[in-house]
Image 1 (tube, rainbow, N blue to C red):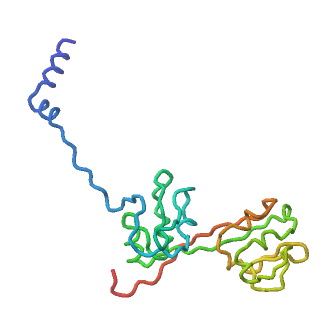
Image 2 (image 1 turned 45 degrees about the horizontal axis):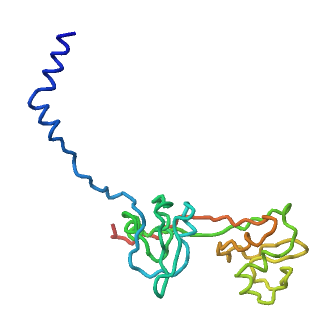
Image 3 (image 1 turned 90 degrees about the vertical axis):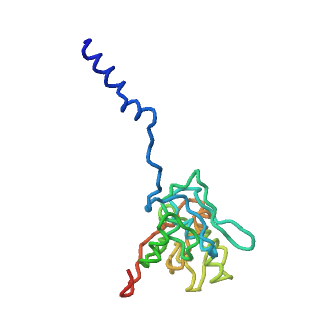
Length: 205
């Protein structure tokens, strides 16, 4: 026991050990190039497409607000998970995070949105509230009746034979106004996000 204690004392009091202990230094922190920080504005003009909000998986992390004479995405850092989807979804390059935007522009990648309208026929009563509330429907047929009936084939959906019939799902903008207007929770808008890549010209690395 005494020999072991002597060994430890001798080891800890070596000049080299004392020097390393008293003057310990860590290497300076360097942000790696792949690091994704909180999204920041690039200075480009926001077109208020709201794709950033549609792509964001974290509730309350981003909103597009008035900024002077235009619009600008506002990041709420307490909710943002720094996934970078808002950067990838924006068609105008308004946001940046790490090297995401640079990589997208170099490789010609982007995200494409589409929406799926799902109606639960067991809950739907055919009241037509969703049809009359839909802003795209209002623009296509300003004379749509209170019951959601329409003879216009350019509307997204309408009441036909007592049921909601979806005609142009591709025109859905994902605003979810129909969801909010349905008294029975019978309609849901599913967001579909797909990656796309344009052919890279020959000679471009």
